[in-house]
Image 1: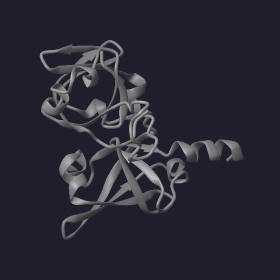
Image 2 (image 1 turned 30 degrees about the vertical axis):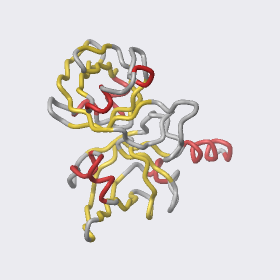
Image 3 (image 1 turned 90 degrees about the vertical axis):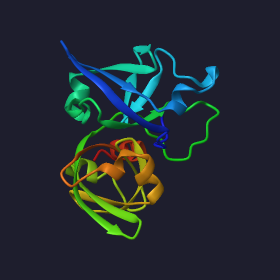
Length: 201
């Protein structure tokens, strides 16, 4: 379980094809490498990489490695990553941790597309196109995770939604680097999914 509050930006150092997916290696920011022993990333830990929950399979020379299978690659933008690309990183939520965003599972629903970026001073309004099935689960002022970032929806219609991004979010996440046409990982709010299931919609 995650909160959608990005801890830092990682830099991809290698993407190696494997029989059933890829092996992804990245260098996390120094603040995550130099964390106290009790808070340092360990083998087998869960880490959200652009909002996708992956398991750390190797830690070597300050770099973390993960494997992403065909199902993960079919529903996320991880298969489009290349060396030197930057990704959002968040470690799983500790039991005693503060929930500052919303409940994010790291189970990406699929890939959306940036359709518009509007600047208003230091702020940006960004619009995304998504599957109608996901749009049904969104409401204005509700929560959504975009590339693992917990965000509040401004408005939503049958195929698109928009978010307002403050300067801090633009600076510390990959959203400040996004351009129209870019693919982003979308995870809708788990609460909406349960309500939809219970109502038989």
